[in-house]
Length: 313
Image (cartoon, rainbow, N blue to C red; front, side):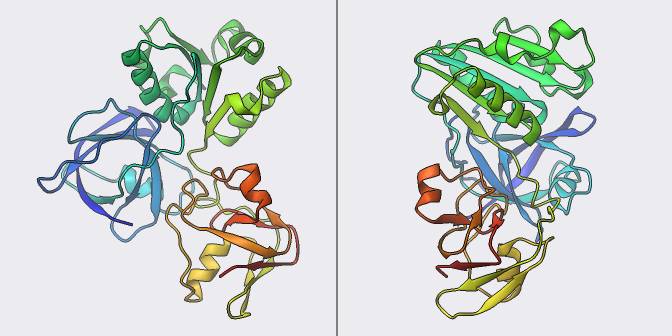
């Protein structure tokens, strides 16, 4: 991966726990252009690499990020919130795994910090004159990012948990019945996304119409216990125990294995390898069903249902 040195040009608190950072090149060269839905890898010092959506608007020489303070963070969000104007970070070139689809109509559904990529999409759709609406759900107005920029937009409907029930997000009402050539984009916390996608599928919306991005699986900052298993490398036969609170990737790197990786959250695809034996427990948000069926597997976020998993490494 190619890294670029960036400097913090501006920092403001959009909410008590969401910091909006503007980054610029530390040297004279400009940042590469990007499209709505793109993200970059960011590393503060020698800390962990994390991915953050670019929330626009596209401006030459600047990238804008919105970062949520994560309780019990293992270093990612805590380091980002500690940044001040003038501090330096390393960033990757933009990648877009969550682009706008070719569709006649677009429905954007954001929960909490999930507004970040959808805010950029909103701007791009408005500039293109496309048919679109945005539904933004948050616990309270004080926890909603970019509220000043959204509140007067007639295509935006705001939903807050602590306000009148009629103002809360209602998937049956706000999505309605499936319509041809309509794309739905969903981003937010896991529980929010699972709820929206489940309701949409229950309404009959096909999976091909549903586009998602999860800004974190939770494994990187809060490892989830699922029991210990063993990972075997096909090239050497070496076996390593993977504890309940560690990822396969962590174990491989700790044992000096040259395993590919980038985001360590299951959303970039850099760590994908092939499973040769065993029953994988897929927890990524990058592989398609056909890729999983073909044996593809993310070592940073996924685990195993079987006692042993053999990888093509």
